[in-house]
Length: 102
Image (cartoon, rainbow, N blue to C red; front, side):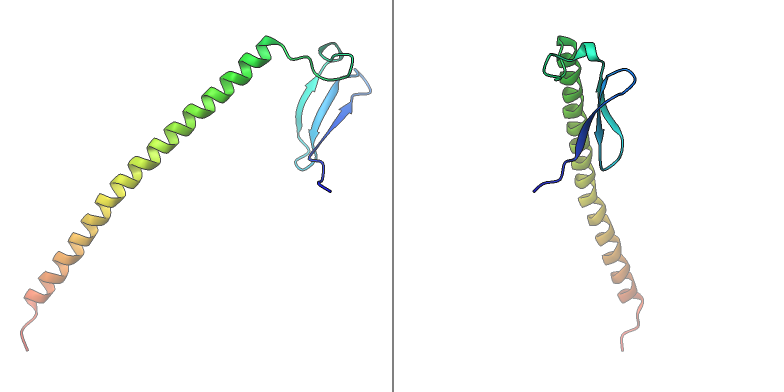
């Protein structure tokens, strides 16, 4: 049986509904009594949908930026490794040229 990750609590003072994450102890969301329907579920307004849509759009934009940054880093990494290999090869050749033949 899966464990519950969050719990809904009714505030004894103001009768608001509070959702708490049991693992972290943080309040995830809360609603005043007037923001709840007759079944106790939150009433979702158009503003709520707009805010959620904006957060998702921002998250997608940030993910794309992180991907582009990682991709350019990987591309430059190939060039950096090629440069290191070339320097090491040159150093080895230089040592071999300076070494007296036996």
